[in-house]
Image 1 (cartoon, rainbow, N blue to C red):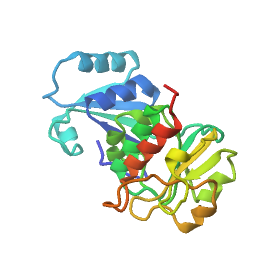
Image 2 (image 1 turned 90 degrees about the vertical axis):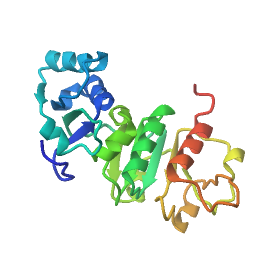
Image 3 (image 1 turned 180 degrees about the vertical axis):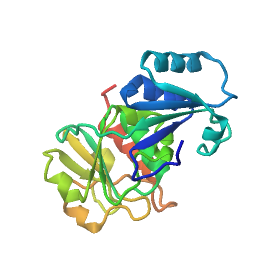
Image 4 (image 1 turned 120 degrees about the horizontal axis):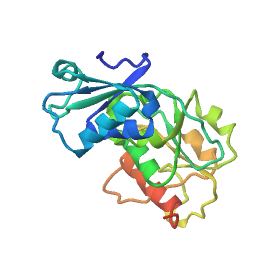
Length: 236
């Protein structure tokens, strides 16, 4: 098993639950499953072995292979899978991330987005790698339920959608709680450090999430969670 290579064509699920998510949702992409000798013979493991047998996926028992890749000592199963592309629905509700830099934030946002029933994610470059194992792990397998696409710049995305666009910005005069939501929509969020540039004040309907003056801003994944709760109110 090779270390993850951004330019390569494979990635990895680190852990039993993630590997099961891979096999249940994207089984056709799984190439092989690595198993550590400390892996317990439990129900989830038996389900993994059953899926591998049914779908003719190689199972490799190798402590060395897992040690050279897994960062956590309690990782006893690793799934190797083919990177994939997905269809992108330009006129469905979408979360748009402009230059996200952190693997953990990207993965957490994927999990939150899917959790609120939104299955479209647009990512504006430069950006973190959606297939990095840290992103996969933070998504808790939600990436296997997601339609995603990278774009060179925001204009490349905006020109192809008729969605109502809502950039989230501290400088906006429109409060989230006062907003009349128009669907379908695209919710746009900036980089963890810089947020969105002032040019987004003239894009769509900029929105502000009110918070105490004792902090300067919210964490990116928290802001996405709050926005999605508002925009999907009544959907569940």
